[in-house]
Amino acid sequence: MKMEVKGSERGLVRVFALALPKAEAAGFVAAPEVEGGDWPLRDALGATALDPDWVDLVHPGELDELGVAGYLTQGLGVAEGELDGARDRLGALTDPVVILPSQAFAGTAQTLTPRSPLRWIGTFQEESAAPVTERLHSDSAKRQPSHESEPPAPEPASSRPGWLMPALIVAAVVICLGLIFAGLSG
Image 1 (cartoon, rainbow, N blue to C red):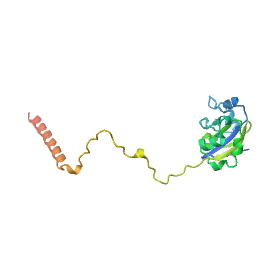
Image 2: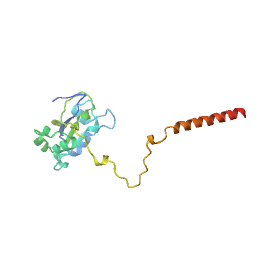
Image 3: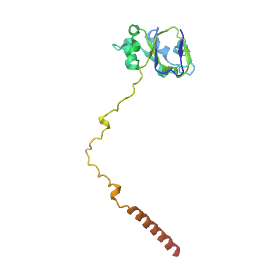
Image 4: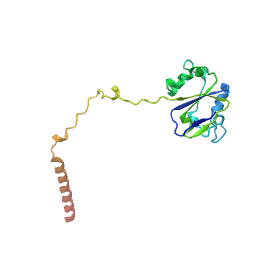
């Protein structure tokens, strides 16, 4: 089986069952400590690029009533309708599960050739965020009354005399000139 991953891919989630005991699964999925080192997950996927920050290992038995389907919809935003034909398959999983959103492929176009111990379960579309069509209102955005006395509002500029500032500037210039002439004659 081959899977094409486009470099521009966004919003897809690939799910694989991992036919390994729980104790071995973490080591299989863990990225190498040295860049370019052996990485069993990358090798089993046939991937050329894989971002370990986006690789998710899930143990179905630890998800309780949520299950893998709930984890995908509630945790990763997969659209409910995407799982219609896969719910029984997802609910029957007992082996560890590797979940790879589009970001796991680091924006790199590549062809995946998954092999044992991986078994592809499905590829699902994330739900798109709906655009906001109405203005949002929040009480926290409204001005709250203050318990302290507020300083008086500044006097509007139109009530101050318009001649005051120019008069102060002229006075400052006259004083400076007077000091300069006094210094030259002294």
